[in-house]
Amino acid sequence: MSYQALARKWRPKSFREMVGQEHVLKALINALDHDRLHHAYLFTGTRGVGKTTVARIFSKCLNCDEGVSSEPCGKCGSCLEIAEGRSVDLLEVDAASRTKVEDTRELLENVQYAPTRSRYKIYLIDEVHMLSASSFNALLKTLEEPPPHVKFLLATTDPQKLPATVLSRCLQFNLKNMPPEQVVGHLRHVLEQEMVTFEEPALWLLGRAAAGSMRDALSLTDQAIAFGSGALREAEVRSMLGTVDLTFVYQVLEAVVDGDPRATLDVVAAMGEHAPDFESSLDELITLLHRVALAQVVPDAVDNSWGDAERVADLARSMTPEDAQLYYQMAINGKRDLPLASDPRSGFEMILLRMLAFRPAIAVETLSSAAPVGGGDTASPSLQAAEGEGGPSAKKPESLAAPEVPEPPPWDEPEPVATAAPEPAVAEAPARPADAMPLSALSPASWPDLLEQLGLVGIVYNIASNCELREVAGNELAFVLDEHNATLFNSGHSDRVRLALQNYFDTGIRVAITVGPLAGETPARRSLRLAEERQREAEAAIEGDPVLQRLIERFDGELDRASIAPLDN
Image (cartoon, rainbow, N blue to C red; front, side):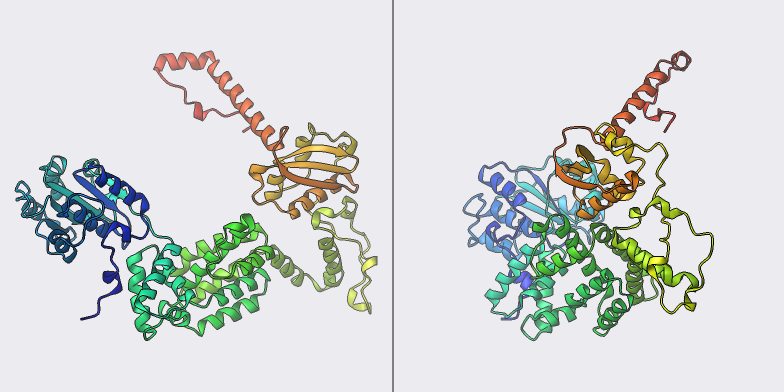
C-alpha cells in the first residue's frame, strides 16, 4: 500500500478523535443528541484547525444509517461513502474555483429533490467567502428557507467578507488556533503510534512553527521525518525550519543586558555561521522577552516547556521591568522594519544596537568617554560615588556652587586626589525652596502637595502618586501602595522616593512602601477628584450662561458636553 501523509492518515473520523475545539464540539453534540438541528452552519477559523473535518464528521452524524447521533457508527454504507469522499448526497464545493453565479445556480438546480440514499442532502461549501456578490444573492433565498431534507455547511477563513444577510441565516462556530501544548501532545501520540523516534525539543519547534494549525504541524512533521531519515532530532528540525539554537538567543539577550556591544555582535556572528532565518530569530527573541516580562510580574505563569524556566528567571532578575518592556517594544518595532533593511542580518544587528544605545548606563559611559581630558580624571570618582549612594537625587543642593578658581590640569599631578575634588552638581536634584515644609509638618493631608515638589518623574512618580502616607514616626515614613498599581513596583522605586525625600528635607529618612488596600486618599486620587470637581464647575458655568442658553434656543442647538474643559486645562 502506498504511503499516506500523516495529515490525511490521522484526520479525525469522529468527534471523540478531535483534538481541541471543545466549545464547538459541545454545541454540535448537544444539538445532535437533542435533535435541535439548524439548516445552515458556518465554520470559521484559520487554515488547518478542523473546519472541513468537523463538517464531514457532522455529515456522518446526520446521515448515518443507524440514525442521527453524535457518535456515527463509521461502518454503514453512508458513513463509509462520506469518509471516502464518494457520497452522492454530500456535495462538496470549492467556492474558490466556482465563484460565478452560473455555478451556484447549477449547484442549486436539484435542491428540491430528495436525497438519493441518505437522510439529508448536504451542501458543504468550502472557502465560501470567495463567491461573487451575484452568487450570494442566488444562494440567499435557498439558504433562508431550504427544503426539510437539505442542510448547508459553510466553511471560511475570512468571515468578514461574507454579507451580513448570509451570516444572519447561519449558526456560526469559530474554531480557535491550537496552543503549542495541545499540538505537541498530539504529535507525541502520533509519533508513538507510528513508531518514529523523536526528541522532545524537536516537537516543540514543530508545534510553534505550526502557528496553531494541526494540519500544518502534521505536514511539517512529515517533512522533518524525511529530512531526518526517519527520526526527529532537534538540530535537524532547526536546520529545516531555519531557526537557531535557543542558546544563541539567550546569549544575545544576556550581552544586551550586560551592555556589551562587542559580545552582542560576536553572538550574531556565531549565529550567522548557521545560516539562520533572522526574522525567525527575532521572533524567538520577542518570545523570550515576553517570558522574561511574565517572570518579573507573575513568575508562576512562565511555562517550562523548554526546560529553561530557571534561566528565564535569572534573566528576569538581571534587568528591570522597564528595560524588559523597552526591549520588547524595540523588538516589535524592529520586526516591522526588518523587511526594509538591506539584508536581514544587518537589520537584526541594528535592532540590538538600538537596545544598547537607549540604555541609560551606556549613555552615561558614552558621555564620560566623550568628556574633555581636563575633566575626565576628577569627574569619574565623583560620578561613581554618586551612583554608589543611589543616584543623582542623593546630591546636596550646596554642591551647586562651583569653585571660582580653576584647578590645575590633572595630568600635572602624579595621582588624583578624589577627596579634594568638589562633587559635581546634578541637574535633576531640585533646589530646596526657602519656604520648604519641615518634616514635622508632613501628614497624609500634606503629602500630595509635597509630592509635586520632589522632582520625581516617570514610573517612580506614578508609584509615589498612588501611595497613601499611612504613618510618620520621626524620620520613618510608612506608605501603602494601591494594590491595583503595584504591577511594576520594586525596591528600587522605594530607594528613589527615599532619596528625593532626603534631598528635600536635608536629613536622613527611612521609607517603607507596602502593597495593600488603601484607607485614605492618594495624590493620584486627589488629582482625579479635583479634576472632576473643576469639570463639574465648568459645565455648570457653561450651562448657567444666559447668552449661551439664548443661542441654543434660537438655533435649536445642543450643548456638546465633551467640548467643555476647565480653563486651567
